[in-house]
Image (tube, rainbow, N blue to C red; front, top):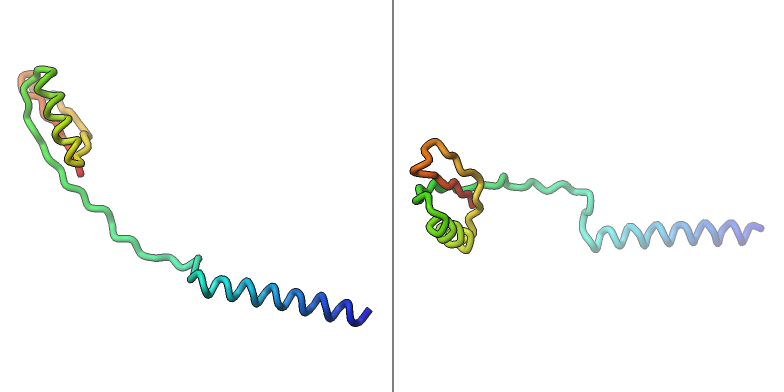
Length: 85
């Protein structure tokens, strides 16, 4: 019986050391790394209120990485497109 208990103890010790070694190799998985806050750029563009002009403007800005976030319609004759990147 004594040899069985020693073998179990050694097995547990070796598994624990192996797990600790794996954590050391992979780095510190529970360490919290500070993240820099995201920063955005905004652009407000006035466009003519026709569909073709608005679609062209949206496609141009979209292909450059800008995302449309709002279309305030304070004046129906001069809609504004608000983009962020």
